[in-house]
Image (cartoon, rainbow, N blue to C red; front, side, top):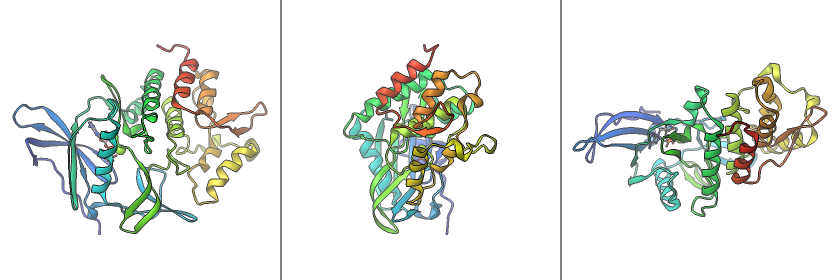
Length: 322
Ligand SMILES: Nc1ncnc2c1ncn2[C@@H]1O[C@H](COP(=O)(O)OP(=O)(O)O)[C@@H](O)[C@H]1O
Ligand SMILES: [Mg+2]
């Protein structure tokens, strides 16, 4: 049975009064609160109780899910939400980078947990995409932050990089809510291989932040996610798909991962946005690991090797870069 998670609004947490809910994901709710003595604000990320989890065994492209990687497919699973919060805090603290949200305290008990952190001002990249207000310089800044984080051995990968987990404010880019790839203890048992991620951004079920960023850059530039918005009119005809792309997509379909398959319907960037330069079109194709051949067919290519390479290519492709 799925129970409604009790709201924290109006609760007193230490010296704070919880005022508003500012976010909700599969495993947690995020609130803001004010200090009763000086009015200073903080954010609280609260683990959902076991009964409040709404988890289907069918894995969808979005949002974030806990996924068991099993032979021949995937299955939605029930993780320990307090353990997830604790490992998130551990990774954020160990990484110790100004681009990650600053955490004050973690409370982790059996079946109950939350962490208190700085309340960030600004908007998520998801909100900026909706209002068509993402500049190339913002994307370059995100790529530079990711380049630095990728070199940090405590961070290694984010694993759930997506527009809702990136905040843009006056103090710059902040990265929230890292995902996870590896062994996971769940109600269903111990999985040697599991993921806390969003398949639309991690379609290969690997912690490949560079591809996730490429998908985000496409979405930010063109307003639609390349693997979520199938546009029937713009679908590639079967004869437009070169063999390497077929093989790439099929290798995942064969193990039961269908999240890459919508790439067959990839619209041409300049058809979606006629004013886009040829250089930006090339950048976006490369960011999602394909290229348009002279014969018009779409072929798989290796794409970018690092976030430094992405940042540099994005600057080169942006004529009026400031
Ligand atoms: N410290 C914070 N300051 C302001 N907003 C936040 C903060 N942390 C999270 N949020 C908001 O709450 C949403 C959900 O938080 P997140 O950590 O991504 O949790 P979830 O695991 O539920 O996705 C974010 O997309 C963002 O809009
Ligand atoms: Mg999130």
